[in-house]
Length: 302
Image 1: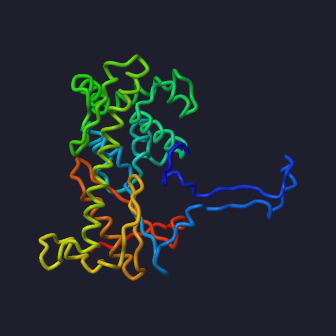
Image 2: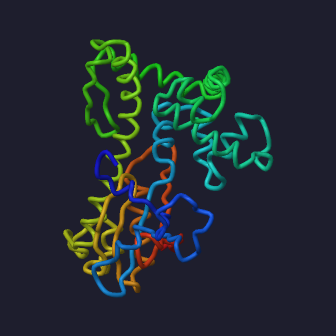
Image 3: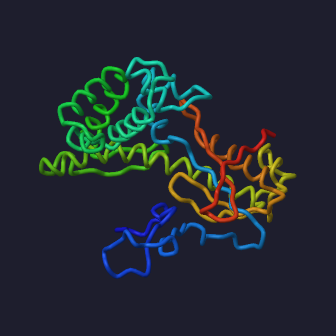
């Protein structure tokens, strides 16, 4: 890793021991090992559990919000179904049931490639296709999602005029190279302009959620005095769970096992209500004894 980053902690690392030569055909089962580094992250209290919540496609949802693209907003408003399968279906004009896992994965890579400002060459590498085919896909995407295409253009134009971009909550990133740099620096600044709005806004949102969760579980506001229904409803969590980490768009808490359902519901409410967008925010909740053994968890509505 170039920079320390908890998100880059490997889930599973495989390695072999006991052999100094390159003849791996003779390696026995005992010489091959698997270690999940995240299993070494455990709660600070005995028998407590980790509970995590992370946003589903938050940057894509922010792109839909900012671009106001009709089709993308429509798809992301649907309560059920896989977003990337639905996008692939519309884009390829095929039934969702006919979309293969490869088509779904390529659509996901393409969407995020567009979001991160990749050109035809980079997308061709990502999708393992020719540059010409990648360029055709870009043009096709722009036709199917004209709102996104217009927004991407407007972001760059606005940044050139103002010299900065703003996140959802008004934080600014100055990008002087978008007009003053050489061609390579200008291209990089254009990618950063779009990326900074979406990733920066995602950071805004999770910090709002994190502050609210922390305030409730530390009893910063008395339940009796609070006018906030969520604070009153989850006041019993005080002292029964602790906020441990924020890892990009994920919050990690440790919790007393008897309070798992309440903690999960609190996370869901605070994170999904952290911002009002044109499309709903969605979260995925997981629970486990270690950070590496998390399993999906579905808290019941209050």
